[in-house]
Length: 94
Image 1 (cartoon, rainbow, N blue to C red):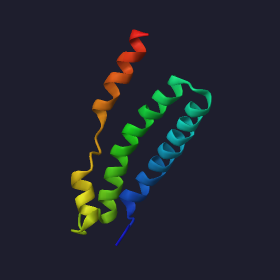
Image 2 (cartoon, rainbow, N blue to C red; image 1 turned 90 degrees about the vertical axis):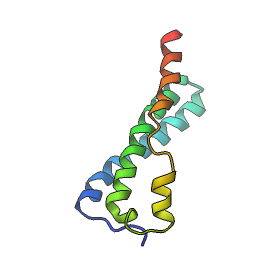
Image 3 (cartoon, rainbow, N blue to C red; image 1 turned 120 degrees about the vertical axis):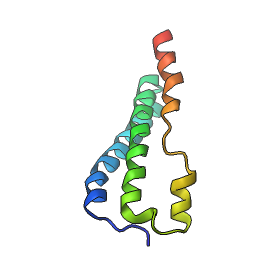
Image 4 (cartoon, rainbow, N blue to C red; image 1 turned 30 degrees about the vertical axis):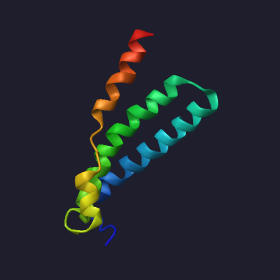
């Protein structure tokens, strides 16, 4: 059982896909142009996207499967809000 999309998880899917696409595009743009601002904006998009993705996968049935998917939801660090502090301080110090 990989995914069982219901009403809740289907409503979260467009937000996750949009966040992933926008963050990937900004990351590639940051690599091509060597700009810090695009990389930081990609990071600012990835962090809330991961939180939304966790909820989407939970509603898709990953908590109920009791296998590797449940283990991934419990042991993968989804809430990475602490990663935002150092880049933001670098922006304000520059």
